[in-house]
Length: 75
Image (cartoon, rainbow, N blue to C red; front, top):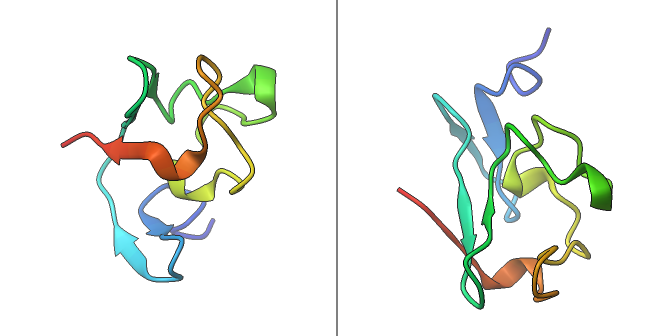
């Protein structure tokens, strides 16, 4: 199994690779929704285990409908 499939390496939108120990959570800047990779967003076609970076660019917040580029990584 590749490191990417194990969630050890993630590719950013810019094509850079980074090592992760667990998948990061991301918060919508327009509402309180938090994207949790472990849960995904199955209602909108994002299966559990999908890192935020791997969500298609056309995906929008399931609560308020704002685009993916209006999310902030939670540290």
